[in-house]
Image (cartoon, rainbow, N blue to C red; front, side):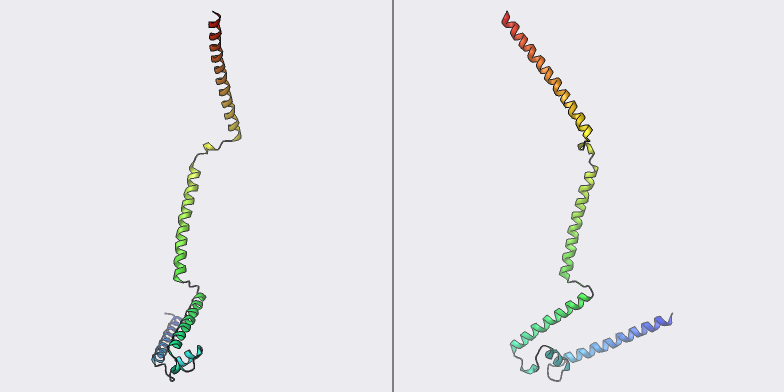
Length: 164
């Protein structure tokens, strides 16, 4: 095995051990009472403007809790934004929007594919249109002439019957 890889793994494990020790120390400090001897809580309360935690009443504690929780939420929001992490609600909304758009795209593709399959019998060229109109006009002329012949024959029959 390469010595550089072993050195890297050794340092990674040492860093993990040191981080674990720091986490345990922090838990010990936080686990202490909120008294004046807790340096972590002193600095935490000082950040929000409370110098003396023993003199806090119920309303102060509620206000402190709200301010500190809002500050923590804002910190984590900014921290996670640095790593391009989005809230779950936003992620779920985008997934739903993506699925809806996929359905619409599939529907539109189906429509375009069906319109491509339809033969172009409805789309005539100008020459075909003129030819069709010419045929229609010839048929109408022929029908009109036949109508006139029939009317003329019935008129002739009616006039010959009157002459007798």
